[in-house]
Image 1 (tube, one colour):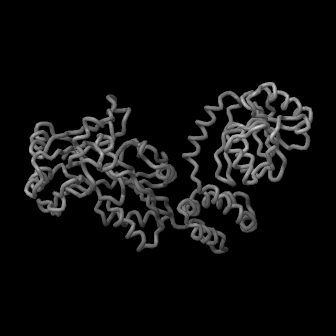
Image 2 (cartoon, helix red, strand yellow):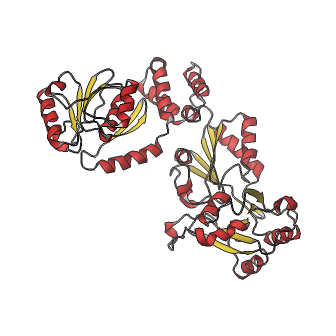
Image 3 (cartoon, one colour):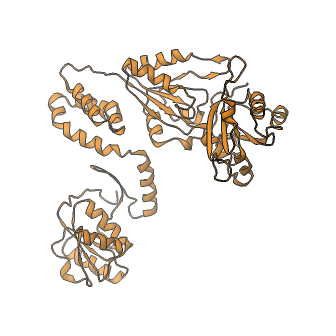
Length: 476
């Protein structure tokens, strides 16, 4: 290591900052958050520092730096735009053996301030050893996305129970197993979901003399979005990577499935027309049984689990069985596919409302409220509408929608297989017959489709390995 990473206790300790600009303000912000008693020396200070001075966060001495300012400080920062002044501050600080940081002058520093991920009391500091501050900030940004804000609460809770855990488990290995269960299991997930009382209740159960070694698992009902892995939420990614068992649908992109742990068991329960790998009732039962066996179960569903995803049915069973669960929304196909196709679902000049409906056939017909769907100035999105497209077109025109109404079909939207078919109600069937799209295909009806020519931005990559793919490409 070029530098020794340390965390200094600055609570109530005097710190000197020489300089009053924006850079000094950023340094002061970190010192104030650490509880330091900050004194700023500068003839003038920026608005941010002025606000802090008025609120009592710092003391401002409105004059140039003087040698006597150095003595009595625990830490000094030189942040003026005058290199000579900064170097003089550093020289005097070294004479007094006080740690000093000089902005944009690494050779004059005895310490550097790293890029910080603040999840108090959890703090993560990133340094490149003076080589590249920009790279340190980029790494911090990546860590920000991987460390939920709830880790601070989790650390506080761990500190609260630390002595009791030590008394309960005299063997160090037993303590480590306990904290592994707490910090990676149900307690952590309750904290991240804001269920603090439940989190404490679980710890109390774990600490009981007659506690079982393994408690019940949990089900994560996660929306995988329409295909592109970049559209996953941070929370979804974290749960995907910690699950023991993955129960996944047909429309989950393979690239997303590969994000799960290599040792996680994978169970395919996908459905396609006239063929179900597992009936819905069996899926509901499977999820409950796996969780009761102590597994962390990832129920991975394409799109959003609560929009034509039967997520409500699955958690209804879990709730009745007393199985803990949480729901992580995903970008639904209507939103994701429309965005990647360059079709805004609403627009002040074209549509003031949008309706999501299922075009899934039942008994050879589509039972929908056609008069409501034929209203002007709205966009209608049909999920699973490819097979029933002729009926959709026929019924919309029969209920007053113009034959010239624009319509779009988005094949496997957001993936490298995306194709967009556009036409009108009077022409779309002929286009589809001449060049049949591959499901899953979303149907969008409305004047907003006209905007695609202007707003189309996404170009699927030519090489399949560069995009997301579905694990099974349905044939009909």
